[in-house]
Length: 395
Image (cartoon, rainbow, N blue to C red; front, side, top):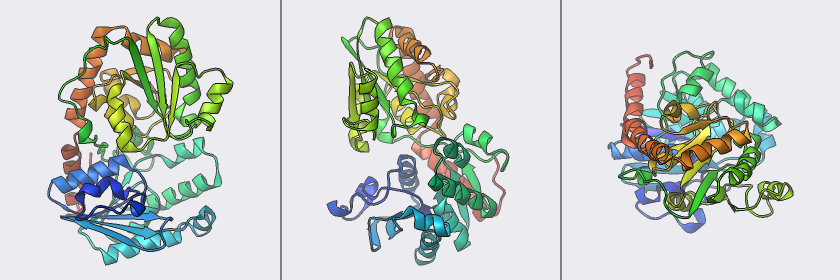
């Protein structure tokens, strides 16, 4: 089957699949989308031919990268948000529609319900659109004109699109007013993260805790996370370190400056933005993954932590998080609105060998049983077959 993927994807994330390495000056093109990259790899490993359409404002011309059964096209988009808002992303959606005619496929799959999805709808091609967030929920956290424009894009996609899926039970429930029982296909884990066995209870002197946050924003809950670590130091005698990765958390940036102003930097290391490959290489050095987000439509970081056998502490009502963590069987669920309760939850894992090792084993088992790349890729192929045979998509 020839499958076209329309989405944000970073070209360098598929470098190993091309006949020639991506030139350094072009490696930045596209945008990181870990789950989509893993899906592409899974579909390719199943023997399918893949075409990727992505847009980037940092190029003035089209770039094409090719390999065995894969073609990756980067097309121009506009840089100015106001132009996109003015005409409802017409130029961008036209670009995607044009690519479907120049680089045709049997089935077309858009990720997220925005310009890539609307481009496929314009092209009138057989399509699947995967919701990866709830535009209304995003708008509640980011009250700005740009997000309002995205919300309107999403509504146009819902009105005109035909076939949809979601990546979590949480999103299925959130979108039940739009369509009931949308098929769930979870995000796949990066197979390079999966360890052959779970890790033992830490015996070393210093215990290292990691949080991976995308921006100093309310939805990711960094302030409560820093307060929780401050409290954790008071209720544990062990030597603790807290390492925060992500944009906004480098020295001089908003997250660091807030922590400094509130005297919450002791034993905290602010790593700032870290490239994905480097982050994955460093993740196994940590003893516990602390995920304080208030809401997640999925949470790829949770998968990577479980795959490395790292116990996870995360929100009991944080969107898809409880479902990803098997409702507490594969991770410790806590009230992320309460710093002291978060600290107590972390302590309960770090001071209890039985709990620690139970979570590492359960997390790794859930990865194998639910989030393996080949399994996820085949679930999508099954949906593609139904669409091409005009069979209604059901759970």
